[in-house]
Structures are given as C-alpha cells and as structure tokens.
Image 1 (tube, rainbow, N blue to C red):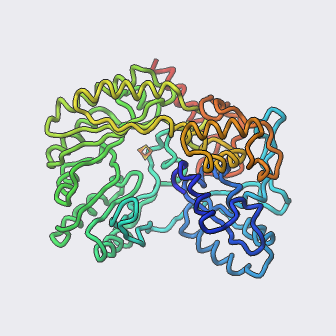
Image 2: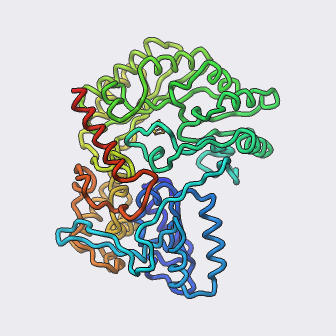
Image 3: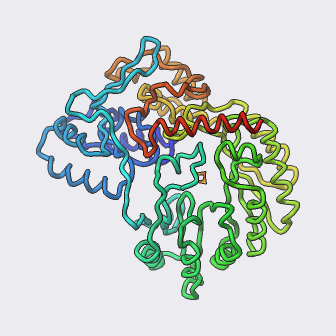
Length: 475
Ligand code: SF4
C-alpha cells in the first residue's frame, strides 16, 4: 500500500475475494492476508486488524524469505504459523501485539502477547546493487504502457517532512551496468515508453552517463518520462536529452518560495538554482516547468506563502518561453519523520486560496490537492488501531470527508457496529482535533513506537528541535 487513501479499497478487495475482513474472524483454512509498502511500513496500526502479516521495508529479500517460510510451515495450525513468522526480522504479526491505553484514552504501550515474541520489529533494507522495474506493462495501470525503472531508492536530502527520504534511508542507486541498462533493454522489447523513477533520480551518481546512453540513435522512438528532479541537478544536457525523447516538461519541488521556510524544512535549495533550472528548461526547448509546493508547513506564516506566489511570478517574468504550473499540497505529518509531531494547520486551506488568487489571474496554473483529503491522510497517518472500525464504517457509509467525520463521531460515541470486531479494550478514542491538528509532545507514545525505522527516535527529536531553533534564529 502506497497511499493512505486507498485504505477503504483494501476492504473491497478482501470482500470481493470472499475473505473475512478482520484477521480475528479468519478460520484455519482462510488465506493469510499479508501486505507491505510505505503506508504499512510507516504506520500499519489503523489497518493492522485487517492483516494477518505485515512486511516492513524492502521486499527484495523479505518477500522470498516470507514465502519460503510459509511453504515450509504449511502443515502447522494457523496460530503456530503466525508465531513462527513473528520470529523473522521485518515480519510483523499485529494480532500478537496488544495495545494498552490510559483511562483518558492515550496510548500507553504496545506489547507482545508472549515472551517469545520480539518486543519490536525492524524495517528491512535491501542492500543489493540493483533496484526494481515493471514486470507487467498494461494500458490498465496508473501509468499506462510505461516500463518503470527504479533509478534510486530514498533521498539523501532529509527534508524534515519527507517520508520518502527518512523512512527508506540509506540512499541507494541501481548500478548502471547491472541494473539500469538491462532494465531499460528489457522494457524496450515490450513498449516504447520508459519511466525513470525514484525520489531523486537525477542524484544517481551516473545520471549523466545514463542520459548519454539513452541518447543513442536506436532509442530515437523512445518516449522518456522522469519523476521530479532536484533543481540543482538540472543541466542543459538533461533538458536537451529529455526533449529529444519526447518530454515536454520537467518537475522540480521547491516546497516554498520563502528562503526562511526552505531552511526550516531543510530544503537545501537557493533561488539561483531555481532560476537556473528554469533557464535550462527553456534553453533545452521544453515547454513547461512544473513546480511542487506545500502550504501549512510548521512555523509557516502568510508572508511565506506570499513569497511562493512572488517567486512564481518572477520566474514567469524572466522565462517567458515556459508555461508554469504549481502543484500544491497541504503539509501532512508522516511517521518516522522529524515533523511527525506537528499537526495539520487549518490555515492551510486559506493559504491554498491565497495562491489561487495570486497566480491564476496571471496565467500560472495552480493544481491544489484537496485540503479535505489531506485531513483524512493525516487521520490515517497518525492514528492507532482504534481507527479500523472507522475505516470499515466509511466504506459502508460514504468515503467523503463528511462520511469520515460521521463515522469517527459514531465510533467516539460507541455507536459504530464494527467496534465489536476489536477484541482488545478500546479506551476513549482521541478527539478528531487531537489526532489531526494538535502538536504532539515528543514524549508521547506513538502508534508506531514498537516499529523501528532507519533513524532512531532520539535523532528524529534532534532534527525536530533543530527546525524549531532555526525558526527562532530566523525570526
Ligand atoms: S529532496 Fe524531495 S525526495 Fe528528497 S528529502 Fe526533500 S522532499 Fe524528499
């Protein structure tokens, strides 16, 4: 699972396969339902009651280990199978852990039910020199007919809100000779569309060599797509090669037009680099520069958002040959990042409107992500397993912001029929406000406390306070 908002879809899939939705309702001969991916690795708890097994981290080694063991223990009863699987690093069996809550409803602890079950589970990291690529190419996929090649995994930049960086560290790149070239060669036998994928593809140490290799005449018919690139790595060569391979635009993430804000979030990016990237895009013959930004970042003020609008307007003024668009999302706290303790700021909604008002009349396309759906993302990313009955109810009610609020309220009031599916005492559900919007103390027991990410909690706290101190220095 790679997107919090897919959560209700999981239940549809189980139902379509006639598999009981709740792990505690599955009988001896029911399948073992397992899952993985960024959402489950970061904070699996809201979905934990629907899974028998959750795989934390990279699948390259973990998945074959899991499948081999499942085959080996086939004759065992279901409960013994789960106990055996729980011994494998990176395999989390939610049913074997019980949360405890204070009378006020705060999470106090999450403990294994037997002394022979590990108290914490560590995310697994693939250390090989190749990464993944598509195995199925179909017009039915999110990126139709594209052969995706993973160029890098994680990102070394450590922007303080970024799960794609913090949760997947260390930064790794696929070997050009053993990984990328064979993957592209394989892809071009099936399609003429190749996508280069990764949080920071242009930071691959041999990215220029890859571009040179892709410039060969035999690839003239290939259409290349590339995920967003770091502004400081955009070059004349990059934009020319991309243009020659059918690209019309590149995307850079600036997050904010305010230098102050970029320092606080640790986005090591200066204005000159942004203007240089626009120049290279224009010189290379590209038509459009897409930028990504965010509103509602911790410590953000209206002036910072004004600075984003100003920057876009100056870029447009200086590089008239390009069309500009700004995709803008609301900051949502993500587990295992230094900003996990910050809530979603309701003022973000107003700031999305400020950007629309400033930019749209000047011909800059603004593509805002829905504030309402960001709220649901925040709810899922910071909740514990007491959210599961809400997810089940939303599927039946209505998967809209209003539907989520209604289901949450019914659960707080004890009127959610799915509450009976949660075997352990629930404690009082924290308020909607507390989960989504409030600033949490760094001493709070988090729903993912028993799961080890790549960075120790003490280090995350240090990075959290570095940002707050920077804010004091810069004001
Ligand atoms: S540069 Fe992009 S991918 Fe890298 S840490 Fe920052 S936001 Fe994340």
